[in-house]
Image (cartoon, rainbow, N blue to C red; front, side, top):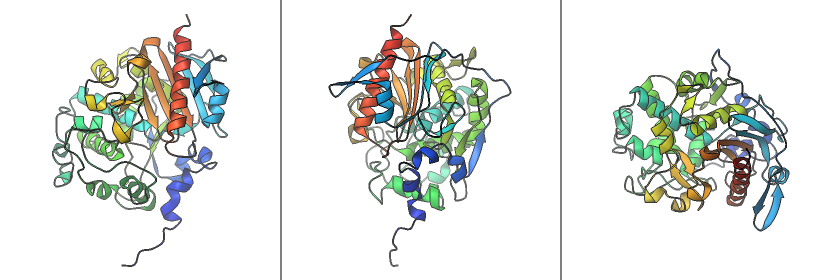
Length: 386
């Protein structure tokens, strides 16, 4: 069969993510894709606000910068800072953003999926992290995922799949994206992934792993990702607005557990408060303290800060679908999404920071390092505040 030239339809993902369009698309994904609502509850728990300027300067690459410069240099669209549960600074530099705007969170969604798995384990709906994937999804028997455990999905050590790179046209992640946008069953793309390392030996950042995790969760709970997130998380957090997952265009339509959650920056901050507070929100233990502590890091050498290899930047480690920053950052950890989405949690200082962005590219090592330096400076400044 003769090959065809890529069409506009094949390149939708590239167009959606290109500046300056992405400032609009990242806040209007429900205009572009099918969606499923994550309903908030009848009880709203407002976040107390004491919004004020933050006279913080940070040093990056030998130069001092202000937060205004950070926002300009890293295309910030929303920036919300909480200290001791209070919004102390909030700004929306994005052209289409505000407190009620729902942001495309990309892979920050992975950290939410992890919380939901922790809740399902607490409820006994998932038996154990040591359970095999195929205990819940027997249709993956005979694929590279046969024999892998839920724990390996959580730490991205399955050994399945290639290096996740957006620049290679025929990479697994690009085929995944094109199938999401253009139709077809993404399960077929995931089933085609090959084993590239023994299970448990090395870290390989993988949206496929989190997609499997979301499918395991749905099979175990008998609910869609959006439905379970609503009853077990969104309603209990007293969120401002409904969130939503966008779904694949092809049928069976499915949420992307590793990248399709959209929510307001304030509601993302509520997730950070949950993690900073050892899994407690509104006086209720939503997810176990042990699960939250697991997300702050572990003793696996292949997941230590600086040891992730080509799948991660040197200043990160990994644990439980969260990026860890180690003792140099006093145990802070963060959820991350491409194009500059951050949920930075510094439990010891009771600081939570949400930064949404519209970078020109999916990944940018320099902008990431600058952002981490700035967030650390904000956290340190607040830690000194009494």
